[in-house]
Amino acid sequence: MSGHVSIPVELTVYGGTLRASIPVPAGPVTATELLPVFRAVAEAVIHLSVKNAERQGRTVSCRDGCAACCRQFVPVAEFEARFLISLVEGMPPARRAELKRRFAEAARRLDDAGLRDRLMAPETQPRDALKTLGLDYFRVGLDCPFLENKSCSIHPDRPLVCREYLVTSPARACDDLHGVEGVDLPLRPSLALCRIDEQPSQTLVKTVPLAMIFEWAKSAGACPAPRPGPAIFDEFLRRLGPHRQAPPDAPAPAMSPDPA
Image (cartoon, rainbow, N blue to C red; front, side, top):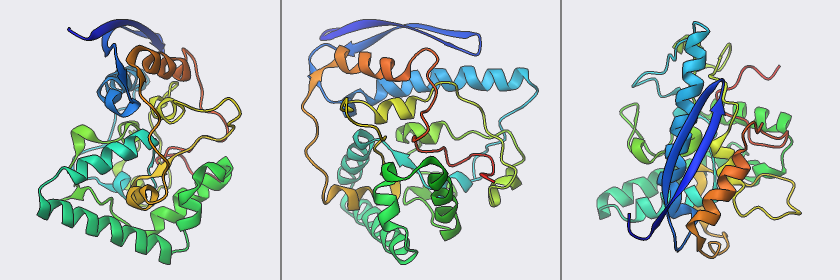
């Protein structure tokens, strides 16, 4: 493939191994431009994790139309926030205007609920507080702006963390998040993506609430300068790690067991 280099990847997840040679742009790009590559790795990790759950006699109960996960606090990487904004901006005028209206309404409702400050800086919250924040957000009953007819309207382009929301408990448990059991992921691609370009002195994981990406954009800094594709992909894999676990300050998956 012209302008690309193949990067060998080997990741072991619950005894299953992903081995692949993944083409990555050789020249300078941003992490946003590499999202298709990161998604491919995430899907492989998720696939192996689901297979492990199935070996334990558990099956994924998520189905089209469930939509409970689309009413939760969804922390995305800044690179994904930029991508989603560009995705909306590139839509036909009427569609773009409708989605921006939904995002503005979402920001208003979260502000009215007193959640704005906590949501706009989730990296400042300890893990226990993040679980509480997730439950407080869920109680608002706010649909994701991209949700239509109980389905994700941007499903192929949905964030990595959305792909990681898989449960094996009965679907009815998702109605109030009590008794929810999720597929365990020993590797968190969504977290690795959030940590790309992380500074050595940085101790907290920065994320952007999906429902407030346009609010975040009003004060967001410039996008990090492009770097060679292999360097960014190598950092993603390093952040992912062969046995990496989410650190204590990482955003908690919305579909998590009861925090009590």
